[in-house]
Length: 267
Image (cartoon, rainbow, N blue to C red; front, side, top):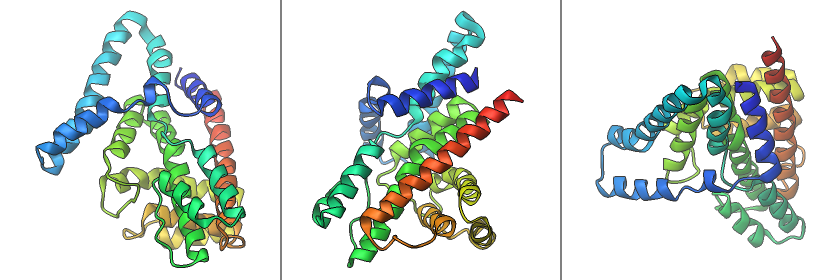
């Protein structure tokens, strides 16, 4: 049932895109404003914004299990995984960015990057290309890979908890030591191994040996290093080609994950 829920949720996500009632976060934003107004300590904010909603979903799961039995995994599990997927329309944003960048409209490209939550503070075109690659790479990573990782490995509530942690963050940066950095840690390393499988394995192996266990490396920076190791640095000095490299790398990694999860489901 877990595998079927995964396939259905993923298929719907890539067919229909983000949006709809399951991606309407008005309730969470209202809750976050009320929690922030009390200026709670970190642990209390985490409890109210992540633990309590997950506990309520868990109670709903128990109730529906009493009515539908094992079918709840398919019925509710599919909905929960879809909820856990990212909100931004990643394919549209990257296509619009590349179109602007290829036309030489770096200002327009920067505005699109900003819509995706990216950093636009670059002092050269090459630096802008690397910023765009890093930010779109993290956006593409967090929208699908960690939710699927936690859903398949630990169950739907963990995928929901991941998305709530993402929603509760103030920005898209991933500072070392943050809770978001912690929950990104293992999925990002698995993605690095995946890039090694579809790219230059030897260069990725050396990178993983040197950087994967470094407690000071940021998730987005490590993923960009992994992309460079897997496919080389050629083209990463131009914004359009850099983002195209990101989308191609993520697509290859996604196919590998689909194949591996399917094989594990058949065992």
